[in-house]
Image: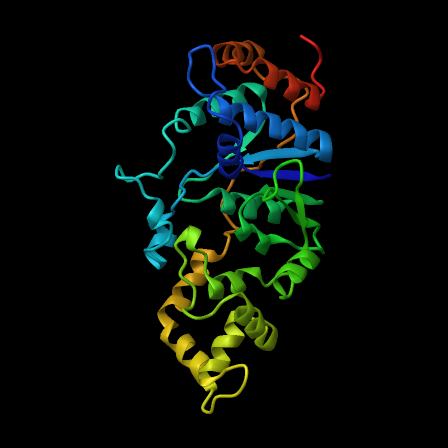
Length: 305
């Protein structure tokens, strides 16, 4: 039984920027993100035939525990009002998408104080059977696990040209063991998340260190006991790693996807018909979503109505 977990914000942002804002509803307002999300979901269902599907939500896009550990975390994305900086034409579409998913009967799950990544990590850990994580976020590469059948369908090239990421793909792309991505990300950093990394340590050096010492903990232990510089721990690199002690204390908690959220049981079975067909029809008419809802229904095998 295959479970498909959608990184919802990643997909609706991709839809917003991939479908012109000239796509509007009868009210004249853009519905490009909603239509794009529904169309992507339909294509994913047709192409990959999951048994279960869950849209995983950011109930908190910048959780307090991550900010407490590293104040720079996503700080550059904070809007003047304090929330996440979201394009003006996208913000009003998100509640519409929530309503459409509810009326269609597609499972949507978030958790107070956690990001969608953490919901995905928890549900992937719980799942029995293969798991496909659909995202444009490389952070979720840390979840790939060949033994458990967890892989990432990476949307970097678009929903019609997904990159299938398993442990071999991580190893081939980054030159590290397939389950070492979180430690690699800590060392290298990620400007898009406000994660500075260790100054002077890029992708190649991060991979060399992980391959030599096995993990971030192994690297730090080697740095602590090093008296005389010895490759790959040159004098310059030792200095950089020691200067980054405080960052390396904090960053693993920020980077690591939580896999133990106390979530209620999540079924995620694909709906055989809309949960609330009248509400779905009304939403489709009000927002000009009829064609996207029809495509979604066809993908899910809904009877003609």
